Image (tube, rainbow, N blue to C red; front, side, top):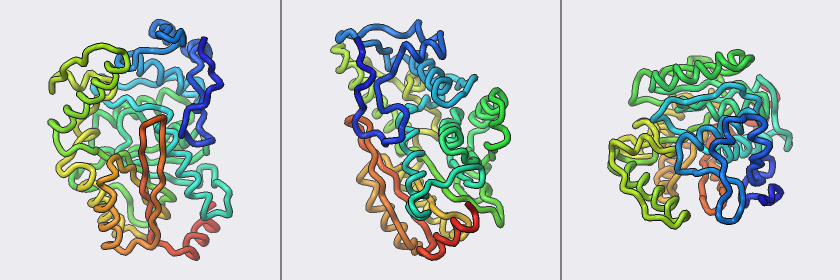
Length: 325
């Protein structure tokens, strides 16, 4: 029998998903999940994490049980995010704000967050709003993703008041055309595309399949370009890769952030590859960032991090919080 009190290593102390999934509780919240739950070789309840339908249904249950989201769905071929890891980023962002606010996390709609590449799933705004009451603007270049995010907002009462969506019409830009003149954000966040090409993205997908199948003691299946989007860790092109990969994307983000330096307290982005960090730091030095922080995160054996930077000195940071929160 599954011991749901076992703590998952590495997750943030405030993360609601630190314990093993309580499938009985989740099935009660979302009965459809029952069809995907099986006992594994250790007689623990689990799902097949290589099954896209199972993973999406688990997400629906998690969002219902922990965040009060009654209706949530994503179209095939869009990224199906792991909820615990997404929640970790949000909680560490709360700590980032608290560090400049006397240790107190600012809560409520006065805290404004810009999610670059919000995607079809809307998960970061949902978690940030439900956990801390923050308001969000989500931006994306994919109109189909934004339309689905709009459906999620419309299907859940109250989200339309605290989450707005904007289309980035220029694929070469990140903040330009999204952040309006005179507009201010306390945080920006981003999960950038980390591959440099479709071929590299497909190779990454193949490795994930191999890991999953190895854990299940079965031969790894071969992945083709045409089948890759069907996977639970698939995604649209803009979600997975861009020219130059995450290094080029983040470098562009850093450069543009300098043009709106006084309009945001903290700019942040996930950095998937540790080898990308030196280029990010060089870009930040080039634009004169006043303070740079790298926050390490972990979910089991998976390591990740985000880099945060600001153009405001400590006095300006304190004044920002006093005036806005």
